[in-house]
Structure formats: structure tokens, C-alpha cells
Image 1: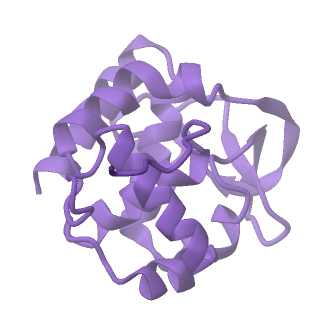
Image 2: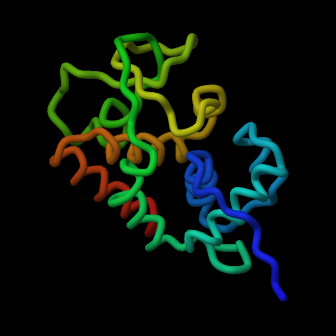
Length: 175
């Protein structure tokens, strides 16, 4: 009999791991490489990939991301499973429609959104990132940064901003 691992539901960093894989061309990287680049333990990468398998977001062998399922989850489910937490104005790293690639396609907004970070260069309303360590590693990973900004736009954006985010997400997923 095949014993199944207990699944207590998705965790926010499960999505970050999948987005990192997409940012690197879609093939699952070695767990050590994922762990090093995302500041997550190898054990947690392994558990995360199992949760992603159970959710149908990776194939049974855990070697490929199910891009269509991930797209649907990001567009229709993410904001309900991991609702955005927005705080007061602070210094940080731009995200959502305050960052590329969405910001270039909307009119200048008076409302900026940031991940709070002491090395940040912009002021804006604080958004709790999906994974707390994102600000520590994101500045060296432009592809993952753009995907995470798109995801935050899907979580907090208005209709037009979400439409643009979906277009940009589709470009990234189909690249």
C-alpha cells in the first residue's frame, strides 16, 4: 500500500518555489540550487514539492510545473488562500503594479506598494510578501522579481491592473 504524506495545505513559499522554477526556464532545478537561491532548507523544498504534487501544480514525478494549473491558481485562487496584508507607508522594494512589468503599462499611480526592506529605495504602502525572505534575495533575480510583482498585482490590483498582470503572466508562462 502506498502511504501518502500528510498534507496540511499549501504554504506561501510553495508558490515562490514554482515561480523560481518558471523563472529558470521551467525545468525543476536541483533542490540544493533552489534552497540556496530562495534561502529555504532542502527539506522544506522537498516538502513543498510534495504539496505542489498533491495540489496538481507539478507533475507526479515533480519534474515539471503544470503551467495551466499554476496560472488558474494564481489568477483565481491565490488572493483567497494567501490574502494580501497591506500596511502603512514605509521604505522598501517596489512590488505589484509599482514594479515592472506592470508599472510601464498603467498611468502613473499616486499609490505605491513595497515589500518592507531596510535597503529599499522607494516609499509606499507595505505589502507582506508571500515569503518573508523575498526582499533578501530578489535584487539578484530579475525574472523571479517580475513574476512576484505580477502575482502581487493579481492579489491587490484593480480590474485594469489585473488584466495587464494576466497578460504579463501569460507571456512568462508561455516563454
